[in-house]
Length: 410
Image 1 (cartoon, rainbow, N blue to C red):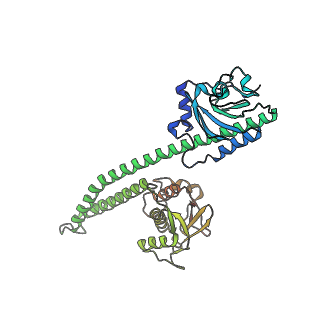
Image 2: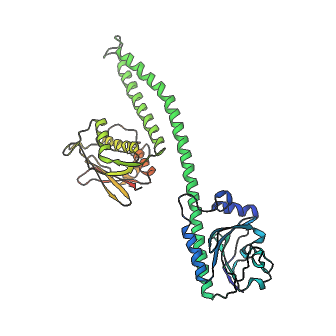
Image 3: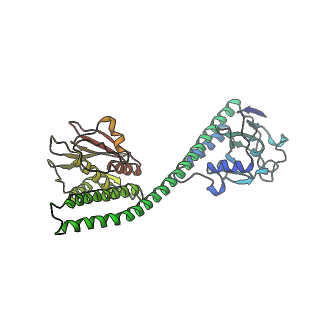
């Protein structure tokens, strides 16, 4: 029998142990294996490699709970579950060292164990390495065994310990995946609440604003309120402010809804751009205000349309006074997805302001700039992120701004 030290271990109480294991998705109610979107194949490969490395027929990854031993991967047998008191690994996995036994029937720790006596199995050679995390918590063990005595070399045991560390890395990856999924669920829930709140606030504010606009229009039509009446100027200001507030409400509502209920599909960039151009009454085609390449990308059609609309409105609002506006939409497709470029020849954005301009409610307040809420680029960025991509701003050669939007593939 040989012992190889692997350091100190943490021995939490039963309740704390199950709590730690739950973080890794390793309790029965957590479906035992990997969460949706991950694969158990790498773990299975490591177990098979461990058994072959030690020239034995069996290998398992054991997770030890407060009352059970659960095999989450196995070579040479089907994964099973047993009571913790019947487990061989449960007797030594918290020892802080690897355990190697040439013949378990002659070892006083295991001689009466049902896996040795023949009640459950007839294990003779047995070796296990604790699955110890960087924090010192031991999840279980990587175990190899056979029904015949064996004497592996120190090099073989050293390699078994390396494989055990790889098993821990895979389980840590599973833990981080579960944490990410939980965080995403919380974000989706938060976004849904935000959209609901924004919708209710928008509805509550839209009604009085609409009433204000109605009264302002009625007053302007009143024959007693002529162009020279002192109240006319104030009525015009009320109308202007109310319309600006309504536009802000619509932008806030649009921002809050971005990313919810995405239905990505193969979508034509040119057809979507043509629809937006028609809505905005922009000249479309080579040599006109707007030109767009043919490109198919995997995106939600409605949100792609919103993204292009905001970028085109920005290009028109911040046009250069020195030249006629021109907007070019192009893109490239690769195995990883698509990248779309929306380039204008407008005023451009200074390098130090490009990142800040993507934040919500940020306006640069430059002379001659058109009206806006400061949410257009923020909405575009959220649409890109909701698709798993990103939006960045760069300079257009010759002057202007180019928005670079990435869309991951299927």
